[in-house]
Length: 131
Image 1 (tube, rainbow, N blue to C red):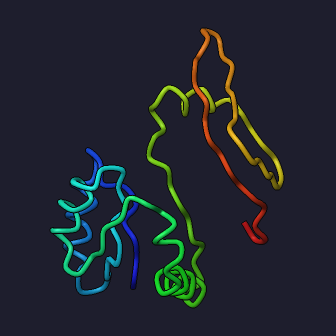
Image 2 (cartoon, rainbow, N blue to C red):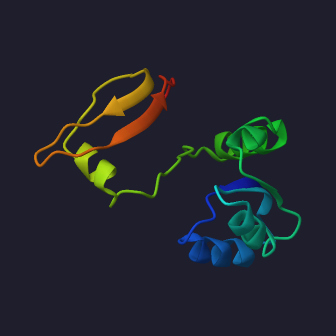
Image 3 (cartoon, rainbow, N blue to C red):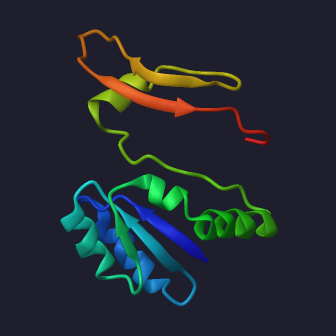
C-alpha cells in the first residue's frame, strides 16, 4: 500500500516504529512536515520516502491518493483521516459543538468560550457522499 505520512513533529516516533514494522506491506511515498529538518529526519527512517513541507505536493501525487482509495474500496473498509490535536486548547473548545449533516466552511472559524479563547481554527470541509 502506498501512503503519505503527514506530520513529523514530536509525536512521530510511534508512527515511524509502526511503519518500519509494516515495511513489507506499506510503502511510504511522502513525509510531510512543517519543519524540513524534522521531515528529513523522519524520511531517513523510511526507505524511499520523499520529503515536502507542502501538503499540495502529496495531494497532487495521484499514485498515492488513488492507491489508498482503491485499497479501501476493494477491501470494503471506510477511509478515515485523524487530526491528533484533541488536547490543544482550540480542539477542546470545539468539543461541545455538534454538527448534523453535510457542512461546507470556507475560511477560519472563530470559537468563543468562557473563559475567552484567542484562537482561530482554519477548517475547510465539504460534503462527501457516503460519509
